[in-house]
Every structure is written in structure tokens, then in C-alpha cells.
Length: 61
Image 1 (cartoon, rainbow, N blue to C red):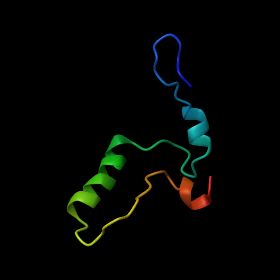
Image 2 (cartoon, rainbow, N blue to C red):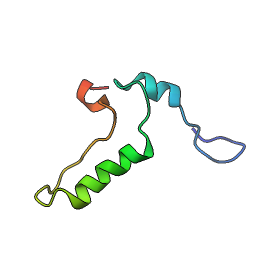
Image 3 (tube, helix red, strand yellow):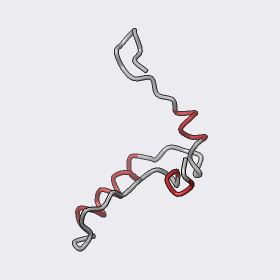
């Protein structure tokens, strides 16, 4: 949804937290860790989507 006042998307953090098994949003360091893993520590991993979603994909939400 676009905020008519500033043209920025309204964030629904409460709904996101409720739908995540961990019950919280990821910290930037946690997101960066997944990126770092794919860039540096996984030379044999190719063509994969790595969800960093706090378990949301695993429970099918």
C-alpha cells in the first residue's frame, strides 16, 4: 500500500512478525550472513534460492 503523504510503502511489521515462526523480523546482520555464505563459503552451491524468512517458508505461510 502506498502512503499518500510520502509515497513510501507502509510496512506491516506486526503482520510479518505474526506469520513468522521466530516471531520477529531478521536483523540486517542475519540477512548479510546469508549473502556472505553464498558469496564466500559455498563455491559448489549454484542456482539456489535461499529464503531468509525466519522459517516462514518451512511452515507454508
